[in-house]
Amino acid sequence: MKVLESKIGWLLLVALAVAFPFLAGNDYYLTVMSLAYIYAIATVGLNLITGYTGQYNLAHSGFMAVGAYTVGILTVDYQVPFWVAFALSGFVAAAIGFFVGILSLRLKGHFFSIFTLCVGYIMYLLIEKWESLTHGTVGIIGIPAAPSVFGIDFESPRAQYYLVLFFLVATVWIMHRIVNSLLGRTFMAIRNGDDLAEALGINLMRNKVLAFMLSVFYAGLAGGLYAGSVRFLGPALAGVEQTFDMTMYMLVGGTGTMLGPLLGSVSMPWLTQYLQFLQDYRFLVFGPVLVLLVIFLPNGIVGTWLAWKTRAASRATSSVQPAQASVKIVQQQEGSHA
Image (cartoon, rainbow, N blue to C red; front, side):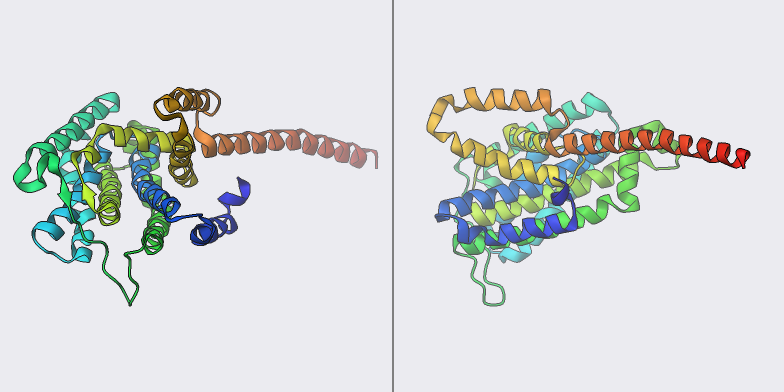
C-alpha cells in the first residue's frame, strides 16, 4: 500500500492498466474493466462531495444518467457529433447540479441525504415517463461509438478500453490537483465542521455548491462515456441502486482518499463477476463479505491503512521524545561533573 501511494506506485498502476488488454483472455474482460473504469470516474466525483466535503449525495446516479442521456438524445435524435455531445454531458449535469445544490445544500446531515434521494427518484421518474424526450422505458438505441481521432478507431473493445482509461487517468489527475489545492483544503475544512469553516472566513454555500457541481460534473462525464461504450440507455441507469453501488465502492476502498474509490470501483465488480456461478445465491456470500469489511475495516482498505500509518508514526514519535529527554539529562549531568 505504501508503494501504491507513492508516485512510482501510481505509475505502476497506469502501466498495469495499459498492459491489461494484452493479459486479458478475451474481449469480455476488457468490457468489464471498461465499465469499472467508467464507474470509477463517477465514484471519484462522489468521493469529492462525500469524502472530502462531508455531504452524502444520494442522487449521484441521476446525474450520471443526465450525462448519458445528453449524449444519447443529442446524437440519436438531433445528429449532433459525438464529441460535441460528450463535451456537453458534464456541463449539463453541472448546470442542473447548480440549481439542485442551491436548494439541497441549505440542509445538513441526513436531511440533505434524504432530499437528494428524492431528487434522484424524481430524475428516474422523468427519464421513465418523459417519452417524447427520453424514449421512456423503450430507451435510446443505436448511440454511436466515439468517432476516430487522429486515425484511431474506437469501435473495438480494446480501443474503447484505452479511451476510457485515458479519461480515467486525466480525471483522477485533475481531482488530485483539486484536492491538494487551497480549494481542496477549503472543502476539507467544511467537512470538519461548518462553524470552524465559517470562523476561518469560508463562504459555506458558495463552496458547497462548487463541490457539488464538480462532483456531478464527474458523474455526467462518466455517463457520457457510458453512453458511448454501451450504446444503449434505459431508465435503470438513474436508479438509486447505482448510487448505492458507487457508495459501496467508495466505502470499501476508503472515503476521503484518492486511491480508495479506484480500488473499490475496480475490485468489487470483479468480485461480483467471480460469484456469478452462484447465480441467485451470490448475494448470500457477497453480503457477509461486505459486513465483515465494514466491521473490521470501517475506514475502507486505504483509509484503514492510512490510519494505521498515522498511529505508527505517532507511537514512534512518542517513543523518541523520552529517549531524547533522557539523553539531554545525561548530557547535563556530565556537564555539571566536568
